[in-house]
Length: 287
Ligand SMILES: [Zn+2]
Image (cartoon, rainbow, N blue to C red; front, side, top):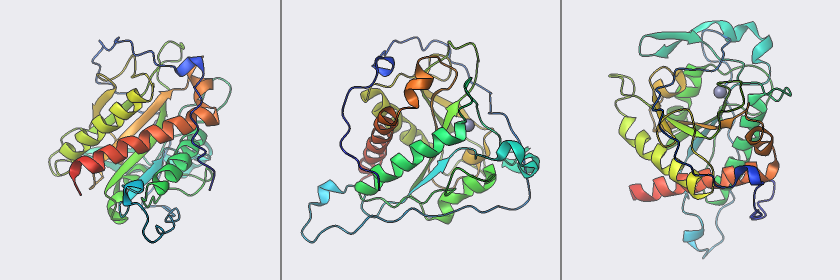
């Protein structure tokens, strides 16, 4: 697996902490990514990443704080969603909503697809979590093909007996290039749907937000409050029976943030920060 050569070099100026507190707009955001569609039952949801190799005898357990923990990873969207009619068929998104199976995702001005970004970050995050001892099944095993549908992505964590699910996305709201920063979306309370995971998901959202801020990433200037948003219209969240969040890593239309987030170095920093956040969440639960 790709090295984790402790990349510590400073990020580009772009992502250096700019922790400005322009978090006024407590918007409740309703800008789902564009959609596209699909179908009935779950397409191939899939593939587990390899489990880490067992610790060496006598190894220091503190080096592997996530030993035995299963973290389901969901790289948002997929490469061929735009051209696959299946993704436009409606599925039950939970809470009385029907939505297309999946969507194309954001596309940057230069053509970069959100699905490629989410895949790159998820792979880096899987590696970082594996080094800490976690097992990391993923909802798709390549940036190719279409789907899976949002309901299948939501159910995936419980199907894998995961302790939590992290869904990776990048935002495409506002194409004027002014919006920037990450936000973490947690599920709202929907009786019979999310009420079993809403509190733990809120804790997970805080842990990831704090870790991202600690690593120098800037909370959204346009969505949520202090980097956290709450939504009840996302199938990936509504269907989950394990604690779950969606991480919108940045805004793909921002002229500085977008290109910076495309570098391997910054993607690694992001993955390391998310792994730190997962570790903080798991550790706090005292399991
Ligand atoms: Zn997305």
